[in-house]
Image (cartoon, rainbow, N blue to C red; front, top):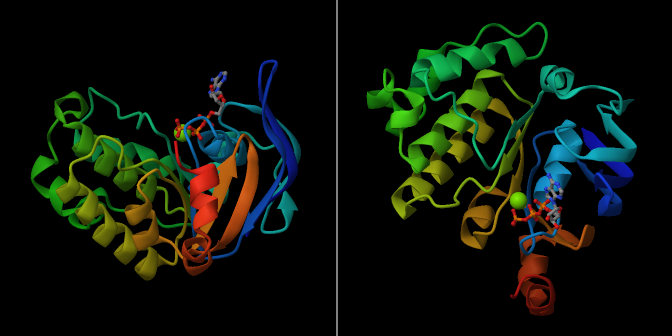
Amino acid sequence: MISAHSINAYYGPSHILYDLSFSMGEKERVAIVGRNGAGKSTLLKSLMNAGPSVRGDIAFDGKPINRLPSYERARLGLQLVPEDRRIYHHLTVRENIKIAEHARPKGHVKSDPDAIIEQFPMLRTLKQRLGYQLSGGQQQVLAIARALAASPRIMLLDEPTEGVAPAIVEEMVTTLRTLCDQTGMGLLLCEQNLWFARQLTDRVVVMDTGRIVFDGSWAEFIANPEIKEKHLAI
Ligand SMILES: Nc1ncnc2c1ncn2[C@@H]1O[C@H](COP(=O)(O)OP(=O)(O)OP(=O)(O)O)[C@@H](O)[C@H]1O
Ligand SMILES: [Mg+2]
C-alpha cells in the first residue's frame, strides 16, 4: 500500500536516511526499532512529508506521492502521531478529536467524536478536560484517538509508550489491537519498548544509522540474537 524506493532524507546539510527502501501492504502491522538517532522518526516524517527533505520515490496505492504535502497525504489515509503529540492545549479532549475530522479521506463519512472517545476507556471521563490539564499518558492516548478521527488507512505511530505508565501502556495494546482488527487499519510503529511492539505487530524492521539492517518476522528476529546485540544494545 505504501512503498518508499531508495529514499534519502536530509535536515539541511545533514544526511539522515541512506538509499532506504521500505514497503508495507494493506492492514499490515510493522514495528521499527533501533537505537536513539537511528532515523526511525525521520522515516515516519519522510513518509508523511512532515519535516525532512526527501529524495527518491514514495508511492501510495501504486501512485507516486512525492510532491504531495502532508495534508494531502493525510487525505489519502496516512496519519502521523508524532513523538511530541501536538495536543491543542486550550481545546477540550472532545474538541481535539473533532478538529481532526477535516483530514479524513475523501468520501468518508464524518466520524463521531463521542464514538471515538467510547473506544478509549481512559478518555471517557475526560471529554471536557482541556489539553493542558492532561497527564502525559492521557495526552498520548488523546493523540491516538485524534488520529483515528481522520479514518486512517495506516497510522504512523512514533514512540507512544515513552514516559507512559505501565497500566496505560497495557490499555494502549488492547485498544490499538481492537482498532486494527475492527477497521483494518495498518500500523507502522516506532518503538523502544520491544514488548509493546511485539504485542501489536507481526513484522519488525531494525534501523541503524539511517539504513534498514533487518526486516523479518518476530520469530526470525528472536532467532537471531546477534541483531539485537549489534544494532539495539547500547
Ligand atoms: N529537525 C532536525 N534537524 C536536524 N537534525 C535532526 C532533526 N531531527 C532529527 N535530526 C537528526 O537526525 C538523526 C535521526 O533522528 P531521528 O529522530 O529520526 O532518530 P530516532 O531513531 O527517531 O531516535 P529516537 O529513538 O531518539 O527517537 C539524529 O542524528 C538526529 O540528531
Ligand atoms: Mg524518534
